Length: 315
Image (cartoon, rainbow, N blue to C red):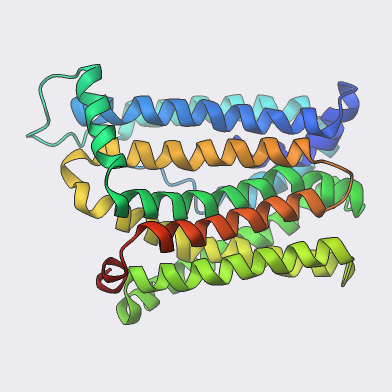
């Protein structure tokens, strides 16, 4: 919600504050950097003090948030989006306090120290499989955040999509991701997570390159941009769940630290991708497409270079 809902207003914010679109896109990068820092701090605290059940707004938020943001922008102005987000955050806080039970395991460590936390993270980073799966998922996910950062300008400014209609296109891609995640359940019974991830990383890299070619040549116009974008975003429903599961599976006793490091890498890469899209902004789809293609290729290289072939087969 905090990212997707205000995406339709990015071009408007550029006009309101007399800032170029690259500067406005830095607000996304700031969000991702803050989230990355929060993740790395949260992991050891979760292992020490407990963690509550996951908040699943995630299934419908990428579809509903940009739709709501687009219409709020048109009806009530860009400020209304941030008032709505403040209210949403308050409701989340109240829900956690009142209704979520604690899930801290009985055998959790009784003490917490910086050295202990750093040692835990160091051990995870020395695990080639953990690092390979984490980077594969993180780079692929960073490509999606390059799309999130670049698409408002590309869609609304370059291709003249009305702000209130942006959410429908964004929601279409989010729907593809959700549908692919449901397909993933079926594929796992036949291929296993390792094989699914390896094949989808190759497909995603290919889709990123196809998007770059279309953006560079102008072939197919706006539809030519939308089709590989849809495929790339949808493929993440088959990539990130498997990458996360394979990375975290051997580290159940330090699940908080492992998931926190996973999230830090993910959102750190997202911040870098967002910054890069902004720095390269030239009023065309090329910067967004180039960063997405690069992320897809890096995700493929990360898994193939770091994860042993036998681990992929067994996974």
